[in-house]
Each structure stands twice: as structure tokens, then as C-alpha cells.
Image 1: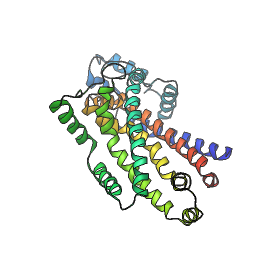
Image 2 (image 1 turned 90 degrees about the vertical axis):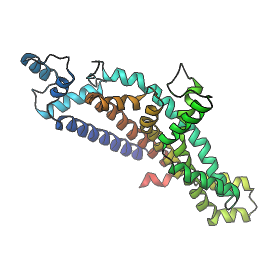
Image 3 (image 1 turned 180 degrees about the vertical axis):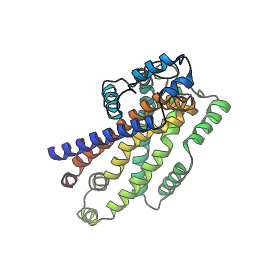
Image 4 (image 1 turned 120 degrees about the vertical axis):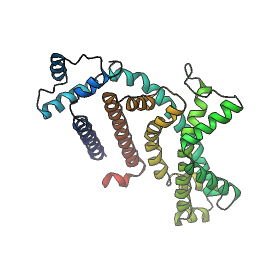
Length: 311
């Protein structure tokens, strides 16, 4: 098990390192970074200031040295400054990150506790009206885009019924403000959970050892949850871990629709304003989160199914 963990951690560190190389290369492939600062104005680009900015950005050093120094700054939490307000990017990300995590975690909980039990119910009641309802929900859940769900929710519950606020985060938890964004974000993954769990459960329930357990007179609840669900857990487990990352990425759309002040909205504003340093910082954060969740998924796999440790 220790060797398995070390190998997976080493691969994850290597993946993050490669990602930093790609991000840094793209930041230099666009041309002289000083041109971005000149376009935004406010630096008074005289000849002396141009040279001073180049020294500040270490453009007077070889490219490899620039990368090493930049990586050292990143490891120490220094992601540079925004072109718009000259604020440290790490500080902006630190302020926005809790809002995105709050939204993503809420959507993840709703999708998991809604989609997995529905998938089990649909598989156990195969061919029944419950199964039909589950399959219809899965179909529409994966066919309707989340931005459309969000806009429809605003139109119905905020404009017509006036039950919920149309946007913004509100103060503190502000549950009323979170209802529509989290449900819209959870819509697609809930359908995915349902389909994956149903397929995995159907395969397990048709297996020989489950038939044998039923023939021995094992209670049905025990057959379903101990013999069935436990062995069908790998597919939903993978989807669950990766979906939390997808929620953070998907929040780019939902945060824009609902004016939610999170990382997604920060990224969109950075793109619109050509704030390249902020885009680089947010991209790095998303990359680290994605690789980290992949690592946790691999470790969970090794715990649930010991055979994977010896691959």
C-alpha cells in the first residue's frame, strides 16, 4: 500500500510540474509580458520604466532561470499582480475561493444524496414506473445545459413567483441566495450519478454471487446494500471525486449567471479585461485542485478495491 501511495503522489507532483511549465510557456508565447502592462496603461511606459519593468519581471535573465524564479514565487504564494487594480492575485483568489467552494460543496452534496439513491432505486425497481421516472430525469438532466436551467430558474422563481433572489451571494450563508445556483449546478451531475449508479447496480444484481445470496435466503436489503451497492461503488466514487472538481469549473457559468462573487466570475472578468496574470493564477489553482482530487480518487480506489494497488 505504501508503494502504491508513493507512486501515485509522485505522478501527481509530476503532473502539476508539467502544468506549470505549460502555463509559463504560454505566458511567454504571447510575446513580451510588458506589452500587456502597456496596454492597460497606468505604468507610464517611458524607456526607463520599460527597462525597470523588464527587470522586475526578470526578463533580463535566461528563460529557464525565469521559469525557476517564477515557480519559486508560486510555491511561496506569490502569483503576481492583477493588471487592473494592481492587487496581489493570491489575495484576490483567497477572497473568492471560499465563495466558489461553498457553492460547489452545496451542489456536490445535493447531487450525491439525490442521484445515488435514485440510481439504486431505479435499478432495484427495474421496469417499474420508478425506473421510468429515473431514466426520464437522467435524459433531461444531461440534455439541458446548466446555464439554461439557471436562467429558467431566475425567470420562474425570481421574476414570476418572487420566491427567491435572482442573484448575488447575500450575507453569510444566505440559504435563499444559494438555492437556485446550487440546484442549477447540481442538475447535470445528479443525472450522471443516477445513470452510473443504475448501470453499475444492474450489472451487480445480475451477477451469479448475488443470485446465490438470494437463493440462500439472505434478506433483500442486505443483498442490495452489502452485496450490490458496495461492489457497484467504484463508478460513482470516481464520478463523485471528479465531479467536485467539475463543480468548481462549472461554477464559471453559474457564477456569471447568478452574479456570484467566486473564482469563476473572477476568471471571466479577467478574460474580458485581458488580465493575463490573473488568468494564469486561476488556471494554476484549478489545475492543482484537479490533480489533487485525482490523487484522492486513486487512493480511495486502492482502499475500496485492493486489487488496484498491484496494477
